[in-house]
Every structure is written in structure tokens, then in C-alpha cells.
Length: 189
Ligand code: SF4
Ligand code: SF4
Image 1 (cartoon, rainbow, N blue to C red):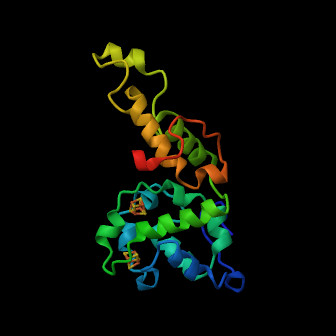
Image 2 (cartoon, helix red, strand yellow):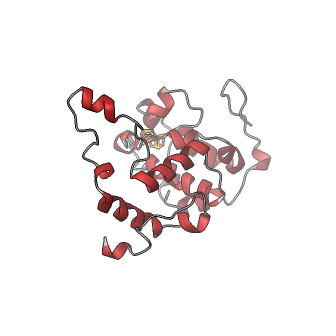
């Protein structure tokens, strides 16, 4: 369980013996090379921000088979994809890939925080997971074009993004309506 002070208590008798194999299958092939040295934690923004389960702790929890605990905790969704952990790891574990593998397990179980679903929906609807709505007037005041020169200004680019997302399992999972114009042939992108 995870208590209020972010201390994590593992019940080793409740560990999932197939969890390590599942994470390896999902992309964390180098998991067992980890020696728990902690170098990845020393550079991780998630750890600095106080999230309870950052890269090193995630790997430790996987070793313990703590699948249910990890599915109950949203720390993995706070990873910034900076890859500092991968650069510093002396064992080539590629901790960021372990984070991604755990995210894949979580998606399969629909253990996805609302904020992440909103980000995915926004990516599909407007081409940005995070963006400022109604910023046009502010941009004009400081001499910028009302619409930034990104996918927001390019309906064709948005169709391409939607076509790519249409090819993923998102449509089958059904987290949000996907009714864009990209519709399903990413080979044309
Ligand atoms: S993933 Fe690499 S850097 Fe992190 S604790 Fe394991 S061996 Fe050390
Ligand atoms: S990629 Fe994610 S886990 Fe690795 S250092 Fe950056 S924030 Fe931390």
C-alpha cells in the first residue's frame, strides 16, 4: 500500500510472479540488469518533484511483483520523457523504457489518470496534448500571430496526426470519441 507520507510498504507474499516477464515483454527487456545503484533517481525530475514511484523505485517494485500497487499509483504518468536516466545508467537498463512498459501495462488495464486521458483527447482533437486555450488576444498584444505556427494553424497536419492515432489501439479502447478526418490510413501520411 502507499500511505500519506509516500512511504511504500510491500507485501511480498502478494507479489505477482509473472510481473517481471510481463514488463520485459512490454519493452523493459533490460530490467534484470538493474543493480539499484540509484543514479537514475539522482537526475530524475519525477523524484525531485516528490512523486513516490520514480525510475529506481519502479524497478524495485517490479522486482517485488508489486503490480497492483503500481496500477494504483499515478507516478509513471509524471515522467517527463527527458531520458536523463537512460543516459546516466551504468548498466544500460534504459529506465525510461521501463516507465513506458509500465504505462503499456496500465493502459491494458485501463488504469489511466483522467489528466492523461484529457491530454490524449486534446492531442487527437487539436494536435497538442497541452496548449493554452483562448491565448490569441494575448499573443496579438505581444506582437505574435493570433494562432501559433503549429498544427493549430494546419488542418492538414491535424488530419495526419489523427490518421496516426486512428491506427493505434486507442480507437478499440474507446477512451474518448475519435471522429476526426484522418480516419485510418496512416500509410498515406
Ligand atoms: S536503472 Fe540503472 S541507474 Fe537506475 S538504479 Fe538501476 S542500474 Fe542504477
Ligand atoms: S525519462 Fe522519466 S524516469 Fe527518466 S529521468 Fe526523465 S522523468 Fe525521470
